[in-house]
Length: 275
Image (tube, rainbow, N blue to C red; front, side):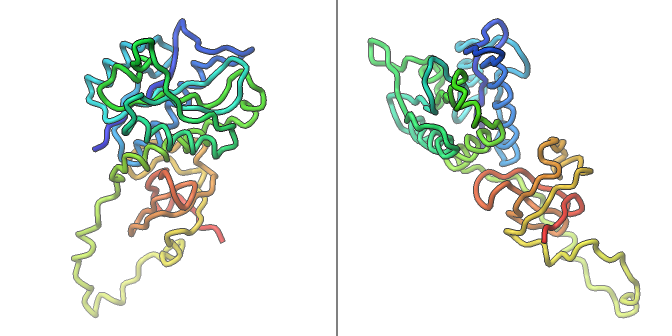
C-alpha cells in the first residue's frame, strides 16, 4: 500500500502567514484533512503531523516521515508577501519530487490561480533550502496553494477544490490500488432456485439496477451516514451530485468527476439516480 505523509504547515504558537483574520495554520489544517480524506478513500495510507492547533517543527515532521517510511511527503502552505498565484517547491535532485510538484502545481493552476511554476530554493552550499524537502528520505514537495494576503486569490479559494486538485495529482503520481468491496463470491456460486421456488417473490428494488452504470450521475442522500468502508460521510458530500466510476451488486464507487480522485464506495440505497 502506498504511504504518503500529508502535513499541515505551521500550528500552535506559529500562525504562519497572517492577513486580517486569516491565519495560515487554520487553512493548512483544513486542507490537510480534506486531502487526506480523499487519499484514504483511494487506498492510500496517510501520515499526518497534527490533528489540531499544535506546534509541529520541520525536524518533527521529517523524523515522522522517516520513521513511518513514507513513500512521499507533501507539506501544505499558503503564501504571503504581496504576490498572487500558486507555486510548488521540489528538490534540486528532481526525480519523483519534481514529478509530484509538476502534477500538483498544474492541477492548482487549473483552478484559476496564476501559475508561478515549479521551483527549487537552494542554500549557499547548493542543497535544498527547505528542511521538509531536504531531510526526509522520501521525495518531498512544499506546496504554496495561493496567497493568503491577496483578496483575488482568496476569492477563488475553495478548500474542497484545492483538496481535489492535490489528491488527484498524488493519485496520478503514485497510482494506488483503490480499496474496493470484496467480490460477492458466495452470491455468484449460489445455485438457481428450483422451479417450485420460483413462485416465491422478493421485494422489488427501489431503483432498476440496470440504471447503475459507469458514468451515470447520482445524488448522495442527505440521510446517508457511512461509506461501505465504515468511514463517516462528510456533510459536504450529502446532497451533492457525483459520477459512478465502478459498480458492484450492492454498491457504487463515486467521484466528483468522471476522471480523477475517488470519493468512496456507497450502498446503492444511499444514492438517487439523476435523470
